Length: 454
Ligand code: SF4
Image (cartoon, rainbow, N blue to C red; front, side, top):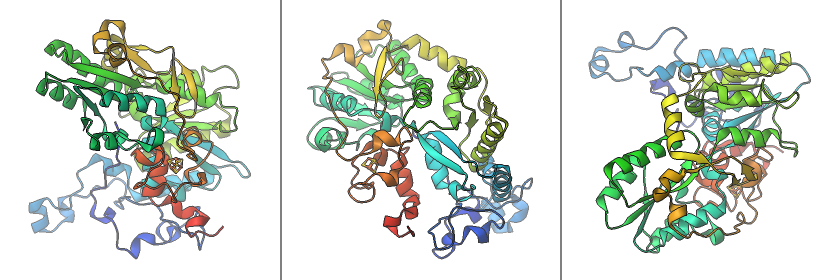
């Protein structure tokens, strides 16, 4: 599921005044070397909670009226992972940790990390020696146009309701056609927030066939599996799944096999995926990899303190020349993951021999399909869906961006033809896309074309 960083509930972390939110980073965090030098546009770290470490805001901080109303109290455990003093201390540690003359290319695998990093302004806190590059962990972004064309075809079949997540609705296919446009032209396309909504649709429309265009990594696949088990239990014979669930380890393997110069020095692993597959699933790409092929991987949560802790651990490993998996989010990630979720996956799905990814092409054993026992629910088995050769939109650099070979600002369409209002590629549509993150959180101001010094 797409993940949105939750705004901090601390009053001091609310959107500051127009003049205040552009204060110099150095003014806010003295001693921390930000990347934005004087004269360079720099949003600085945002959404950080200024409460000192070890002391949470509580009723004693409030007046009697606000105390009675519960206004302004910081009750969220998440705030502890956004406190400015902790973030500042970690940034200072990182500044001391990097070795002179060395660069560190770290890939944030997950699109959720990409957005959280941009949202909190973390690049401005890091020493220039640390470069964060985007990875393929945005399921909408890595879905090839051909699979979207299958969904468009399925949506136009008579008697069909096509259900999918909102992220996919505006992704342009061949000639720019989207599911949103198909709906405007008469196709019955529904946005759903969860597979439970698909069950409700199937129950409410027994005379129609409901096809669920399922996408996502191991985070969303268990929900699809549980939906299918519930459909079978409830005797829903009108539900089908067009399965596009993809697998994180396969993508990691493809990233590390990259011979195009985009191989990272270390990887920030996605904590939400790791809650399902466990830290163990990352070890074949680190300490269990063939000699010279592994990289250090640190599993990271999605708050600023989580991510800086993970980056610090990666830098430590790289400085020591060690290759290992570290779990920087032990509050949710276990070594073996979630056995019940993995059991549900094993009961409903099997691995595809191969699956096409945008940017990677065919990757062996990188995606799931419904197991033979579930063929009655498999849209690919029940309908004659096309398998077109469908290139990416002309000029779109999504294929390079999802594997870290280019940054959004290096796409010639970024901010010109391609904005969130006029997306040309999936990376500008998805809430986890790197181009959307750069645009939404103002990182484009780093680009000379948008006013920054060349
Ligand atoms: S800016 Fe638009 S066209 Fe360019 S890579 Fe991103 S999504 Fe594709």
